[in-house]
Length: 116
Length: 234
Image (spheres, one colour):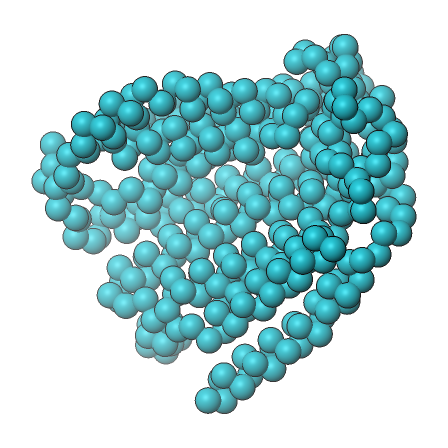
């Protein structure tokens, strides 16, 4: 039940982020939309790896071999995705700073191809 | 208006694409074969208690190497973009001095945070955590020093040195796996050790510590790049 809520929240965040990415005209807001979408994807993927009644895939004294465990592959993928998302967001923000510096504006409409 | 409608259409299409995931997440069916194999065999095979770490460092080790490379490329991009920007643009005014509380607190917390980060990346094969998480924690310690004004800027030399040495050592350890064990990034050329101890799981803790150092140094590079250049201060 909880995992359904997580997956649904993830899907909703993806939609919210996509809406922001498509309708905002300010570069920083578009990057925010991308970040929200990124977070939604992480929730969705981790939620899909969940199995009813299973624990985290880490063995110790209280969870010996044979304990039901969730799928470790989505967790590993999301770990990768978080780092790449961070790197991409930092790079996008650097571009936004640079564009703002060259034009004094952060609106995407001011950066038409022929206007440059 | 037409733009809004198009965005709405894209949104509906995305919702349709995502709906199977939401509707089928009640499925408690069997896991994919590869995941079952990882859970069943990884602890015995590699000796690491954290199966996610085993997947990241060994089974999908090449992906992680690529991930570190992507992170490096993005960091280099941020550095290049912002460094050239700071030359051409007007700089901000002199910075305000940090308060006494922030300055004292940063000095007190800095070694503890670095220690905690090192703990996270050296225990990645035993507990939740690993190189990426630990590296981020180490970078936040330096961010704190920067905010408190204890250091004016990061020394570019030592940071680049740590970053390139750890990247080089990562590939060297991977190649050692190719020569002394079954393949590239195979950590089993070192003894498997006693399960659940710090020195166990072959080369996994070594690889993850190197990843931690590299990620920490790269994120410090991003922080140094994002920092606005100063006007007349000091």
